[in-house]
Amino acid sequence: MRILAEYGNDDLAKVYVAQLREEGVQSEDSQKFVVECVESVQPPIPREKKWVLIVSTMFGCPIKCKFCDAGGDYAGKLTAEEILAQIAYMVRRRFPNDRVPILKFKIQFARMGEPSLNPAVLEAMRRLPEMFDAPGLNVSLSTVAPKVGIADKFFEELIEIKERYYSQGRFQLQFSIHTTDIDKRDELIPIKKRSFEEIAAYGDRFCSPEKGDKKVTLNFAPAVGYPLDAKIIRKHFDPSKFIIKITPLNPTVRSHEKSLRSLIDPYDFATSRCIVESFEREGFEVILSIGELEENKIGSNCGQYVQRVIRSGVKPESSYDLEKYGVRIFSSRDSDRP
Image 1: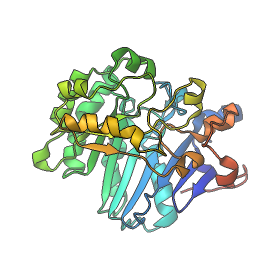
Image 2: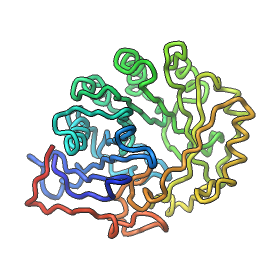
Image 3: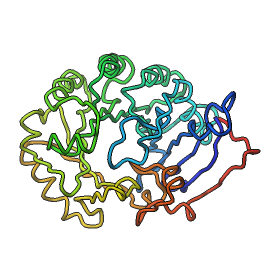
Image 4: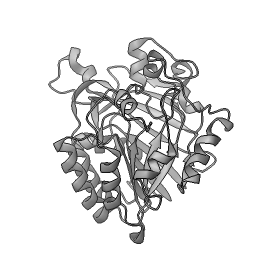
């Protein structure tokens, strides 16, 4: 793995652009095997208490969600070694002895790619605890819940992995839902997906509160024109096993091209109050996740992908300030390997 570029800063977040599979690949095809990974902190929490790494699991993504810059240009699945190489690079920059003394060291399989369509993610999760001396290791997996054979098998194995390697609340499973309108959900996420009933049934099996498991997250990035009805969610999901996360729709190239507008203004908490309270009335615990808006300019937030803006030449307002946050662009002669 060779690092091609870095964006961001150490005080908040950094995006690393990495070239994989250089050997035996024609130069004109090398762009197909570029991925991004991210490290971030959550001010004012210091890095010693919480450090998050976000890794890619595919080259491009076959899902093509309407708002996501990482979708499209699908060129295959990463191997477990390639997934772990991203983690190893970011860890060894700071902890060359592989000892990570972070209270909460969180790995998110959520940068580029749908993880449930790549069995190598499961292998990476199995091997991860052996790679580092990291007592605070937690993992998080975000999925749109594809309904295909390979994903069905993945989700079954995921329960076993959670119970064997990440028990006692060290695994966070998130389903990205975004709207309660079935047709609109298909418009946003254009693949065959598990229904609310099927997600609820799986979550009931996955989450065992009596064993200390985290609740399963239902994630919504509400957009104007895409309904979000808390009563529909309550009809299907048990608040004792599911938690609601509300986030703004981040400013991506794709959302700009599709004229999608966030229902939540990250600068005005009043715009989210109604949504949050509607879920609380139904008995749900709600996380309003509005991070540092500077991450939009770095390009490290969910749904963002630096390579998309470079290729398209389109830069949405208040995002992807690559000239300001370009830390280093490596030449082809440079070598920066884990």
